[in-house]
Image (tube, rainbow, N blue to C red):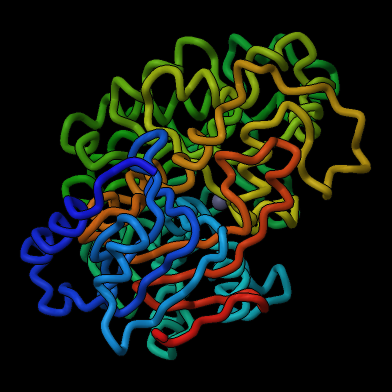
Length: 457
Ligand SMILES: [Zn+2]
């Protein structure tokens, strides 16, 4: 425990004015105590307790100080040694449109995400006809996570849908918990009908593909020249929209980065995202930080990377899944699920965390693929970095870092309570950590069977 709490409490009250909330004062509406609170602000900072007023964080501090902020109506939750963290943020998911693929209703998919401790997500591909149905679902209260919609410029097959997004205002709240996030552009064809997603390799890498690699991917090319993609990005930026560009192969990533360079300062100031980034040549790495591009990456595990041994035999260790190298450039790197992806466990932030930090496969879905070669240690990140990629960096990726991503007085009270502190767990223990409670906007939105609350004694 570090950090004086009276200061935190005073800071909370001081920030109340900045956020203009009359409800943002003591007494607290909710106090979590009896455990560890990890605010994800700086390494090593923890608190004993946290107080919430309405939908915002009032203060963090010692148990004694937080209990002093409670009144007769305050809900008190004893963590009994568990750990509270900022709610997980998934900056690239498909919880609304792809729920049926998993045999789920929108409401059930939202429940599943909340049970995983996820409190915010980007819906990373919204077609024109889908948007009204999502608004209707939100009006019915079925959308329970803070959801940012990414409106499709083109579709998975590369068909251009055009700038229909013009009918909406960037970053506008359009229904409860539903906002416009930006514009999604495919720089490469994705899973079009029954076809596999394209992986476009550059002229430098194509000759290195194995016969099987050349058979599967040798003909794949980006959908745009960089100048064409730059025009799409610039048009969106003129209207205030940031873009999120799908790019798996190094040629598509190169096209995306070159387009964002050509598109200029206005587009770059909107913090564009490039999604997937699975194959990165050395010269592409520094471009993310230079251009202010956020990299959104999946927690691809060792067994999945092993597949590329057969396709790009000489380069697997130096080219695939370079999350450690990318983070080392100082670029913003956020970790996402791309749910529903091939691995059913991919939605779970704790399983994804295990895959980000572990050289070996942590996903039960890949158990039958083992033994798999371990991931290079340079491409692993620490548990702290991995958690940041799913909280603070993910909030930054979605332009929500002022309100979300850390636990600080004045921010929205979105929290997850875990059975153990991931920062103190061994790598082997991470996948076994369970979500106990998920709080969104100061209200418990999901409770495990053992989570209980009791009124102030
Ligand atoms: Zn996706």
